[in-house]
Length: 378
Image (cartoon, rainbow, N blue to C red):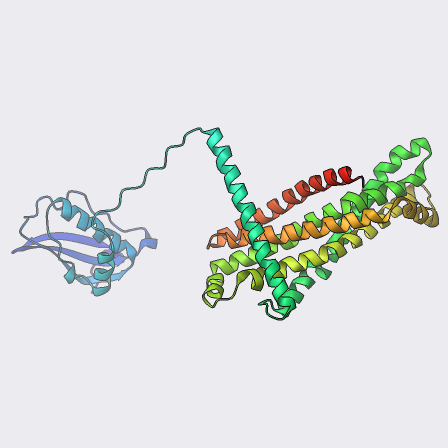
């Protein structure tokens, strides 16, 4: 029976013949905020040859707050060289108390921080080269899996590939179209302001066409897919990592590169060139919309000038860039998802990191392609 006032947790220390009795009563619930603390020197007057036992017939409900109190009591008894008989406690409390160490571990001091910029740059370089090697190895494994799938020996499922193709292709048409339309309209507006001064309004069509086909459509589409699809890939794979689904695939001998990575990379590699072409057309339409309103350019004249300004090699170069961008976004996003942690927070971190790496990487690769185009004279 609980004899405490309003069920409040109470304890009482009482010396008896050949023992010291600790009476526990009341409800020991942490959320109620009424758990008493055990004084550090409460057992200093207890004889060393007398054990400390417990009486719990008046104990009500309890949770870990009681275990915390008992742990403090055991620590004080150890410092006072007094034995504690935990067998008189409830069986569940006795088992939980036995799981706790006699001496709490000392907190590990944080490692000293030394200012070493050269070592930091070197470590960053080594980590970057290691990640480049891992991504390259993962891409090679995915390529081998793709070749095996062509001869019917791969582990890639067609349903996974079709699902990823739908997510990376038709489902992305709206956002890709809206962004490229606005980019084309902005290019036409900015170009018309300057070209109108020289009575060269018709060359707005050439400006929009070359800018969209050569740079803007490929880069903007890749950035959109890095934020939309690349982040989704990283979040999906990191969630599987947290749920130990990746471990299960490895236990069953299913290669992750063929089963998970290959459909994702192929989906982006196949759809990016098509989305690039779609973005070029929509961007030119946006440029025509602004030119028709502001400069009174005829549709036939705008179409003729666009055709004259675009040689075929510009589209070829754009297709190659889009394919590389899609492969890069797919591989890096899957790699970031695979190396993520196993908590819910790590899923969000992996998705954010995949978006950042994808956008920065696409812009860096575009700079490399710009140098290559200048060297080969495109």
